[in-house]
Length: 222
Image 1 (cartoon, rainbow, N blue to C red):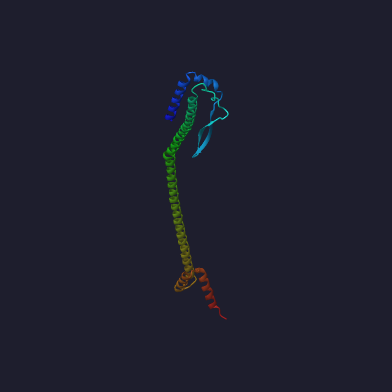
Image 2: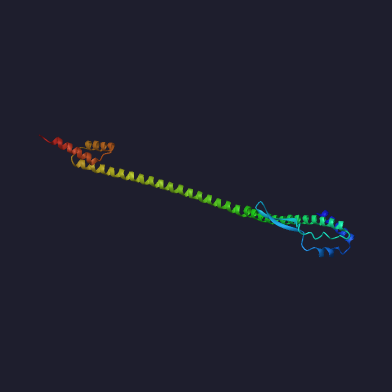
């Protein structure tokens, strides 16, 4: 870049020396439109749209054909080509500079997002996960304790029901034995009937009634 601009400056000095100081006025008077134009387009680089500038020549505009016709024509043509290369270099430099500025801003924004994710979002998410895990563990412990209490209560209720049934059965056996004794049965018969009822799980009154019916049958005389 520096060498191109240096060469352009030297060529302009040569033109001024060869044609005189009036060359600038002659150029301004002879130029109507710009021969070198710049077009812009966008290029997508990793999701970032960067402007790209490109210099091109307008072939329909060539106002320097008669410039330097009297003297210094060679120096004028040389200066024209050198400054054309300088303009192309400046346009390319403008594209690079604009891309650098945009990329620098995008990198800063990305770094801020990365820092926010690393120092804010990730710790917050980890704390949320820890809290959820602790709550789930607490729910599991509460559920286990509840099931254990329910099971213990069922066992106690079953044991109480069995004890109540056993007590009722004992009471019925005692009442049946007393009734049998009042009915005139011997103690040995009552004990054998009650023992058989306990072993077979039958109701004592039924057995005693069956025993009474058997005794009544024995008492029948034909």
